Image (cartoon, rainbow, N blue to C red; front, side, top):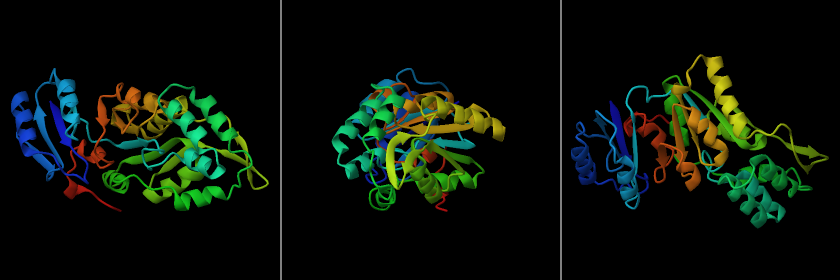
Length: 292
């Protein structure tokens, strides 16, 4: 059996019941179950629709996401999440670069790296090098004034924790940020790169080895082995090219507002909903969401 889930942005709540019924009838699905009025609905299917990507493309202009996945095992026991532009709304290194006066240059490198156009390790070293001499105190300033959580994140962590799931934040960013974000959202552990500091200023170097694509895959493998979980019990979420390894290995790899080249390689693509979509596609209704 398969489950088809349709959802929209919570701020718009523009999921038309007529669209849900039309698609359900066309695909011969079971009765529609509304997970949140005008926001998210699902129905079961006996087979994977051959035209699902054509339908997906047709409804993108309506602001509707469509996910079709096996029903069995869709409730996951582990969340492995990227941080920048996934659990938070910013790219931390871009915010630091703005403070250093090199924002435009660094943002261009970041965008190209996340789209897979540049080697991640080399791009990170180049960007960090442009921060050399920046007062380390700027990190706390950026955290306090520039970093905002992605909507829905608290509910995802609290609800999955409520059902016994484990959550790990694994970022190509920096520990100074992941530690704070992990604490705010309730992640069980976090892994990231280290910005080197000497005499109160950034040295322009990053701790080695760099945590990139391979390290995210290693984190998934190491944590699941430690917890006695299978890869199929993991939901991984990210937006950049360095996330593709873990997205491909996890039972549910979610491209969240991802770069087009990244989304194209993932079966679960969320372009309109916020992080609460991670709960809807597991079958949770909004009434089931926890906040702490």
